[in-house]
Image 1 (cartoon, one colour):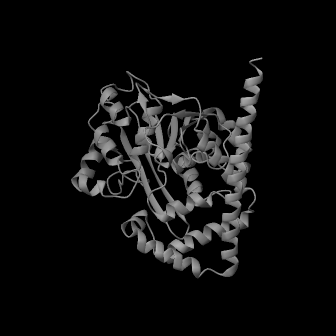
Image 2 (cartoon, one colour):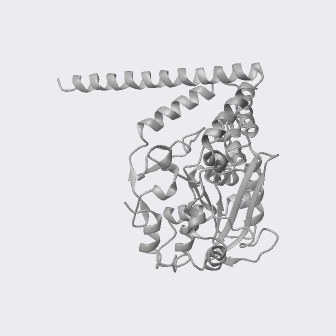
Image 3 (cartoon, one colour):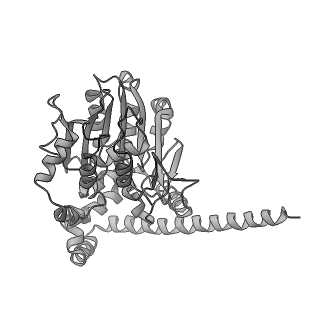
Length: 380
C-alpha cells in the first residue's frame, strides 16, 4: 500500500495554492525535523532561513545512503523523505529556520524543533519526537510522574518566541514531538493561541489528568487533531480527551509507530474504525498499573531502569544493539548491585504489571462472552 514517499511522487507537483495543506503534509513535516540539520538550517539567533532544497543539498554533501541505513533508528528514513521533498514543487521552496537540537543529560531532556514557512507566510512549527538517545527515552518515561518535563517547557518558550511575528500558525510532531506540539499550544500565551489554526499529534503520548482537565487544554481541544496507527502503543499512553482517528499501517505491533508504514490514498490517510484490541488491552493494563503506584514510586522505578542503563554504559540504542548479549550481561550485573529497597520495589512493580495484565484479559473475555450471549438471545 502507498506511503508518504508515494504521496510525494503523486502530489509533489501540486503547489499549496493548487491543493491545500493536509494531514499527510503535516506527517511529512514531522518526519523532516528528524533529520540532523545542525549547521545547515539557521538557529533561533537570526531571522535568516534556507530553502528545503538547499538544506537537502547541503545535508547530502556530507552523508551517504549506506551510512544512514546502518543506523539503529525507526526514523532513519527521514533524510530520504527530505531528499524526495526537495525534488517536488510542493515542498522544495519552503523556508526552514529556527533549528534547535538540544540534548541535556543533566536535565534529562531531548528537545529538537524547526520552523517551516510557507509561501503565504503561514508558519508550521515541527517538534521532533524521541531520537535514539537514552536521554530522549528517559524524558518519555518521566512523563509518567512529572507534571511537566524540561522539554515541554522549552517547547512553550520556543513557540512563544518563534510565532510572535506570524499571523497564521500550525504546530505538529510525531511521537513525543506530538506531545510537545499539544503541550506548547495549550501552555503558550493567549495571543499565540489565537493564531494557531491546527495542532497535529501523530501517535503522540497523552498527559497527566491535571493537564487534561485544565481550562487551557479545553480551550485548545477543538484545534487538536490526533492520529494513531491501528496497534498504537506510544500514542495510547497516559491520558487523552481529544477524539482521534486511526490510520491503517503496513507493519504490526510497535513497528506501526514508524510513520513510513502509515497507508495513504490521495491526500488523506487510509482510516479504520478503531484501534486494535491488543492496543486497548495494553492501554487498560498500563493505566491500571500506573494508578496503583504513587508518583514517588514511579520516579524510583524510572530512576532504577535508567540507572541500570547508565551503569551498563548504554547511551544510545546503537550501544545496545551493536553488542546486545554483552549489554544484557552488564544490565543483569547492574540489577544485582541495586539497593535492597529498589530491588523489592522493582519486583513489586513487575508483579503488579503481571496481575493487571491478567485482570484486563479476563475482563475482556467476560465481556466477549456476555456479548455473544446477548447476540444469541436477540435471535429468538
